[in-house]
Length: 403
Image (cartoon, rainbow, N blue to C red; front, top):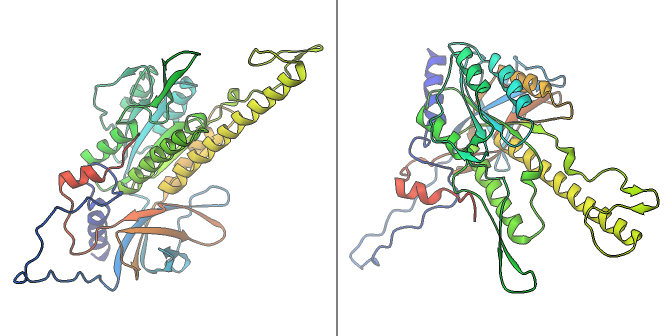
């Protein structure tokens, strides 16, 4: 009976605030304008924060070999909440918890191998208990159809096989550059933009439309260069805002993001570019061979720096959402499928007492030196006694995908 009561409380806690909003809370809505208080108007009572706050959090644990850890004890868990040590109340391993998984393939490269890996991942889901939906990120044609939840393994595999790489949902990290002539002397106006809504938003909407008590997770295939910050101030700011939007969405909907990294070493300008005594430059231009070699080496370093920065950004999305990232040069992604399966095998739910009540909690959770945990880095929790946001406020709280 105690465990049943705990599960009821947990379910209410994990879905609290998710069905009333369309996106993550970022900045509070501006208060409505009210007339100045008169002398006869009583002052509003001061808000008193509770002395402590009870929170719940889901995480996964694996050992140094990548195998799931199924026997963690409460005394092994340490939680830092907003820089303060929290008191762990209860810890429950829940291997029978259903899984709700979104699988998002990347339409612009290595699509056949992605399909093969997605099918292998679908085969690990338990029939009648787990379910998933699939979609394509990017593509030249937009999708108008809904993404059904499929618990039948054969139907899910068949849908993956029939995906069209050219038909997908908008990718917020896909560069769309428009160039418009302006004036004389080859002057142009460059506009970097993407669609307002992205495949992440459609995925969150799918979770929101069917809020059953389950382990929510997104599995996304990504390559680094789309996540590169760029070199100009405006492009770097835009990339950061999009990254923040994705992470906040995953945190708000309690949906970790597991990344299957696609290494694209073709983006590197590697290899010799000399033909005998003649240098074959990447970009044709005037100058001697030494000067052109120097320019090519400089361009190569820039590309490598952007590639590495994009890879770091992809890793940050996985880490901050409570998921993980796998990178493989073998192009079979088998290690990622095995790692995701192990990470989801034994989810834990921990309840703890926060002595620093707040709506935003920065979390650091550890379970010993030999245990690797995947946990959400930030959680949102409505303060006791506060009213849930209205639809208009929720819309105003949703951070923009692009600027």
